[in-house]
Length: 440
Image (cartoon, rainbow, N blue to C red):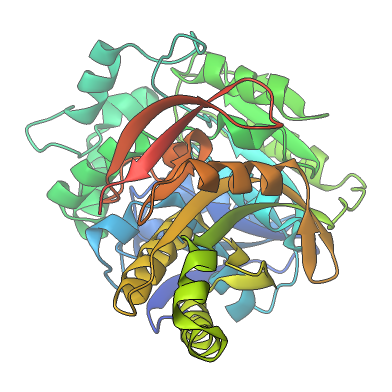
């Protein structure tokens, strides 16, 4: 059996540690994102997985990690652990720690590479999605999704809610007692059953369909033709520009069980091709607009000197919160700010913190949040997403934070409570837009 790789630790901006391993020394760097079913320290105890690792090492250097809240990595608050944007932060942190500027993203039954590739094309060489889905739950405009009875069965496959069964992820090894013992032990050492149940519930609420059109990197969508997600994987390929699509035999969700060789051959063939770097001036970003309420009237009431002092305090509060939530100031609009974030949850929490901080000064603010594609021009950003975020802000009442449906989909399953505000017409933007108010 191969010698296990050394487990290292990467430190996040918040001081949390992420366990990771760098395996192989091939010419291509690959970052692997996977379901939280086994920790990196136990990968070397399962022969099927060791074979998969060795085979990958023959043509690439691959990096595996335990997301925050799992395995040997630090634990974080439940709400944060369930956010897909926290997972993309983990990915960037691990790449930095491993000294990798750009990597191929290999997503094994998880869609996180989609979000990372759209947000950070400058750090993404290509993306490979194996048995992945942008949305699991069926919707009126998404017949590819699963019915509620299927989701209910997936959420409670055993006496311990949230613990995935071998029958679900590797039916080809359902009768293999040795594999079952390893798999069940791996899950116990990865995550507590209650936390696994919370994460699984959050997974079934995520909807990344709006992100697919923004993925610019070369993409391979690979799936087992008899897997439960086969139709959903084909949906990905149909909605990602110029994506390659291929199927391999079997029904297992795990890539290293059943016969992994057809999938490995297809991955190797894709990776050894030539990739055209994507444009890095177009990225997925979350835009936050804030605006002071009745600023003109307050300025008249207070006079120029007092108003300038209060406005300076307003600016200080906003900039302090931007620093705390890792937002980027784009421009001051006169009565508010245009800012961008890597993740919608941080943008929402920053908006709420700004609102509360300004309330202590006797100021009211409204805020709008939207996630979409922006064009970068130096320090400035432009594009329809910026316009939409501004229009969303105009719908907000004083003291209210309003977000678009895209934002709501990306934070679904977290501890951020949203109230459906119905559909609205946004000036200059086609079609009705479903908006949500932040409850906290």
